Image 1 (cartoon, each protein chain N blue to C red):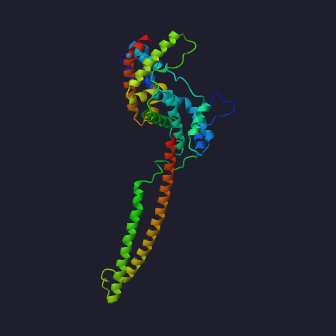
Image 2: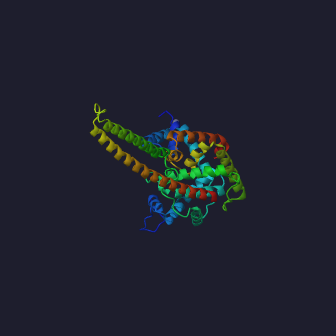
Image 3: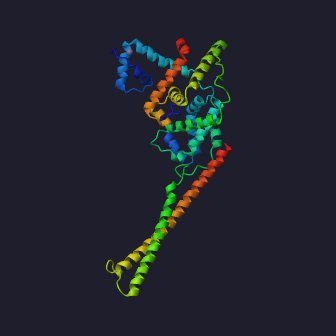
Length: 181
Length: 190
Ligand SMILES: [Zn+2]
């Protein structure tokens, strides 16, 4: 028990030691006046600090009433300032969708052009690598996909605008309130 | 949390139940939360601001922020740490906006049980302590206040300040060492 416990005394004083360590320190303190004196410094500093009490408290009802007066009239919307803000990448999604749509439009044009050419020449120019039926099917699929992308873009765009407007409104309420206080 | 002063048979709602009500817009439940935590929050902001008017203003602002952010509070977090974090930020904001109007020497009113000499001596001591605390850097002062006055655990302090527990311990250690040097005369008197 000759090894001093100086480095454990702060945590001991703050009640932060696990019980086995706490017993260790207590055992040591019984035999060691050096560590007892050191612990006493922590105790004295704490009591010196606590001699400074908070001078006065506003009565609870008054304090609560003052807080109530400062509250906004309505409960803030569930969309919080930070969480409600649409992330920047969300802006990119409609843009990507539009680009996909444009690409598909072009693809359809090219496909029908090839088909027309194919039929016009009466020869299966491209039959060597793809059948006309395949082309027709691909064309129909492309058209369907194109429509889906267009619908998706519209829905996403509207949802995004709604979210953004809600966030803007929330921001305005907060900034108005911030100006008053 | 049971309130010992409540009449037998009534069980006080705990903080989480009150928050759940307040989240639905129940102002009565919110007022109960404010009243329950007023003392600890005002005392925290007072220790930080060193000015009672500023401290009460910061404490009220903290409760307004709590109300505004109730929806983002999740019951798995300790309410006290969340509340203290908001209050700490509110106090720091008001300190940055508005320097204390009264200085650190403005002291409590005389205790009726003491002679004027005793009061004067005590005020001198307290003034000395406050100046010593005020001289600490903000990170050291924050940890010291949360530990010595608010009696938060190391883990709670870490949660409030978003720092590791090891940092809490080393800052607390530095703060105490500096205070001991500064208050040596007073500590020797004791
Ligand atoms: Zn020892």
